[in-house]
Structure formats: C-alpha cells, structure tokens
Figure 1 (cartoon, rainbow, N blue to C red):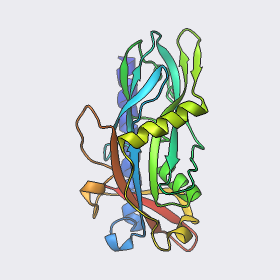
Figure 2: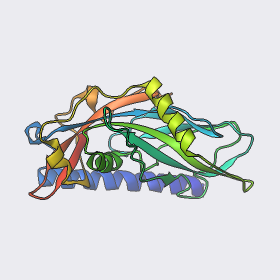
Figure 3: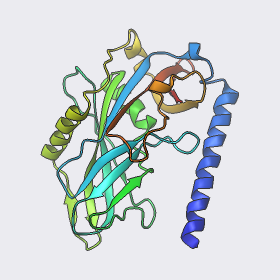
Figure 4: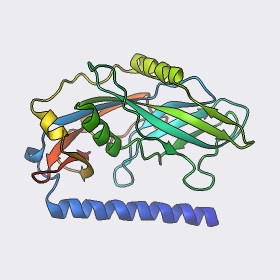
Length: 250
C-alpha cells in the first residue's frame, strides 16, 4: 500500500510539474506559432542492443502531459538480479568526423527498487533523464549539428549479490555498429545559419501542443511492445539576443 501511494504521489507530482511548465510557456508566448521556429534539429534514436548481461532491446516515445523522457525496454540476460544500472547516450552527427558525444549518464536506482530486474527478466524504464530533449540540446550544441543519431547503451550494472559489470570502449563501438544496422539515421543536412544559433543554444526546453507535424513529433503512439528506432524533430527558438531554446512538441 505504501509503495502504491508513493508511486501515485510521484505521478501526480510529475503531472502537476508538467502543467506548470506548460502554463508558463503559453503565458510567455513561446512555442505557439509555427512562424517563430528556427532550424529543425532532426533526431533518430536507435535501440541497438549490445554484448553484456543487460541489453536495451526497445524504445517508446514519451507520453505527452506526463514526461519528456524516452522509455527504454531492458532485458537481463544473466542469472542474477540487478540492483542498479546506468545508461549512457552515444550521440553522433551523420557525415561528421565520427566524434561521439557521450558526456553524461544516469543511474536507474533513483529510488529504492527502481534498478531491480530479476534474472532473465525484462522491464520498461521511463525515468532515464539523459534520454530527453535536454541531451539533444547539449549534443547539438557541442557537435555543431542539427542532425543527430542517439544510441543508448548500458554503461554498467550492479548486481544484488555485489558483483558488478562495466562496458568498455569496444562494446560501445559494437552498439554503434548495431545501431547503424537498425537505422542509419535521419536524412538531413546542416541548416543554413544554424551554427550561429547552436552556439547560443541553452538547455532550455519548451513544449508545445500546437503546429507540430505528427510524423515528426517527439510524442506519438506506438505499439505497446515498442520499436527499435524512431525519429523526431525539435526546433531552435530564439528567446532573446543571447539565448536560444529547443522547442519540441506533438
């Protein structure tokens, strides 16, 4: 009963926070007019799988009004229960020099029990913050690109018996290669003048429910079993002379 109340309160808090952000965005006049958009930032996310005891096998777009985090489907292929695990997004810009942006990661066990996956079990995790528009903004700015491919990988695992596992560079390279076989990413090039705007892009995310092409929305319905890849677009939106935000929506 306590766990149910805790989870219910968490969901209500998340919805309340989302509504407050939406009200602020609308009252500020941001993200309600398609003519206010700048260059599109086109993103493809791929669930490639990888060698190791814990694998990411599927994706689900975020739920509008609830979260902006992309959900990941994980499978524990070991004979041990996990206690915690961390996920890192590998981000590349097509036709670039091959640089991989991987400057962040997140742990699953943000609360007791949230990192637990039984032996041979599968779970959906909807609370990995690095799989969100904030990472898109950071990677677009640092890679100087409006065309991104994101391949999340399991960086490390802590098992209930105290054992640990950590990914290495070769396994990350393997995940990227698998990702290319799943989806080569968006067919997009750099937008004219976008590099100047990318230099001013901040980790400020604006969400809009109007004037978005449903085929390129961050929020959309998919089969409950998830997909191996999906693409979406956000837009650069100038707030003032020194700040540009990332505008996403459905």
